[in-house]
Every structure is written in structure tokens, then in C-alpha cells.
Image 1 (spheres, protein in one colour):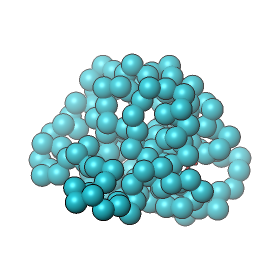
Image 2 (spheres, protein in one colour):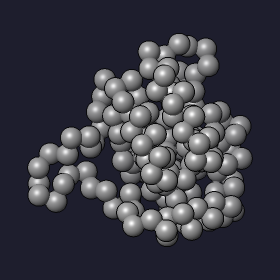
Image 3 (spheres, protein in one colour):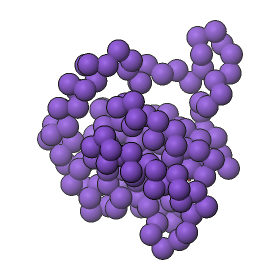
Length: 159
Ligand SMILES: O=C(CO)COP(=O)(O)O
């Protein structure tokens, strides 16, 4: 499955600890994240994550684009409900597009636990039908184009 991680600054440690706890499970999936979140998870675990831009620089929108193309199966987004974010419209858009496409999304640890256990049990296998009907598999995405030129939006982009 394609799983994405996002956490606001005061929630990053919580998400990193969560990924450490479920590292073995996540190793079997294709992982994506906004820039700083992905970098911190990779520093703390052996997980390999495709990192988009940092959230305030467009990372939430890039994940939204994945969802619009039905390329994401699960979003784990530890939001900080107590701090206003400069890119609030992007955050709302990301959560909205999850609802548009019926993508499971966890915005806190308790829900993330439930969804990850469902992932472990195979409850997400119906998503394979969606992928099998699609010509493009996102996890074939390369960090650099085949011609060797620089990819405009690949790799970790820090603020
Ligand atoms: O701001 C974010 C999500 O809205 C997260 O972005 P970073 O992972 O780059 O900190």
C-alpha cells in the first residue's frame, strides 16, 4: 500500500515514535511524507520514504495530488490543533480531498493505531483493486528522471 506521513512541528516526535513502533509493518509498504516529517522519520528508523516539499512550501498539496489520482491508500497526519499554520488552506484541502476520494486518514495517534492494525490485518486489500485498474504505479516514481536531469519536485526540500 502507499502510505503517507505528515506531522506538524509539535507532533513530529509523536509520529516518529509511532513509526518506530510500527517500523516492521511499514517496511512492507511504499512510504511518502512531507519534507521535514519524512526526513525526521528516516533519521530515526530504517524506513525509506519519498519526501515531497515541506508542508508550508506545497507538500500538503503534492500529497493531495496523489490522492486525486487515487495513488494514496492511507494518510497519517498528526495535526496540531492548538497552533495556527500559515498554510491552513492547504491542510484543509488535503483533508477535504481524502473525503472526496474516501481515503482513510488518521489525524491523531488513537486513530492511527486503529488504521495501522487494520492495515496489518489486510483490511486495506480492497485498495489493490483500485491500483490494478490504474495504468501508472506511483511507487515506480524515480527521484530523478531517466535522462539524468534534475527532478523539479523530488527529494527532501526543507524550509
Ligand atoms: O506542515 C506540514 C503539514 O501541514 C508538515 O510539513 P513538514 O513535514 O515539512 O514539516
